[in-house]
Image (cartoon, rainbow, N blue to C red):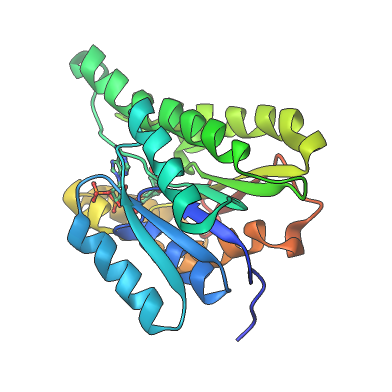
Length: 250
Ligand code: NAP
């Protein structure tokens, strides 16, 4: 097995399930020591750590609500304690809630922005302090909705459009420190969260599939290899990019 990330330390936010869990497992399989962050699903995070360890990899689970500054500080203090540095940050933790215009509330707005945008910025702020002179890689999980912007998703879609803009801005700001910043825009992916939101068994899923050139929704395994690529030296001259992994939907 290739060990492209041997000796590297990766932090994956929201890695107790879904896309983040698969990313954590694939980064570890590529040789990285991984911090598996979770908000409330301790058992889920421990299962991910156990799967990594069983496969010969290294990982620790760290609880932190990434929308809270004090928790983000704690997450990186624990990372420093466990592994001493950060080479790769995957900003994956995110929530999606849908609402027609007339039902949008300040709470709906702030809940999604506080995690999807502010949390991502706070985590990046802390992570870059633990990156050395050799630089590092930040990978932001945005979404196809950043540009597709389906109806009833105006707040969620704009959080992800913001993530793409933050990616481009920070790529310029952090380039001189050899820190690369890229985004991945998944299409609809079957995860615990997508099931919980009722999307997977809905007409919306059928509509998405009918508009997707490759004719199906995604699996977590479709997303993680691109994150490993963006974390590794294989992408050493790539920054500020947004990679759509959506079966051609955009
Ligand atoms: P998911 O199945 O709902 O899993 C979400 C993960 O984020 C869980 O590990 C959860 O931990 C964690 N999390 C939630 N709130 C958190 C917080 N405040 N602080 C830290 N961690 C938190 O989600 P997913 O479908 O895999 O989505 C992951 C990312 O991909 C999100 O950014 C989402 O917007 C994006 N995305 C998803 C899809 C899709 O179709 N699934 C498509 C495009 C983009 P706990 O379980 O402990 O709460």
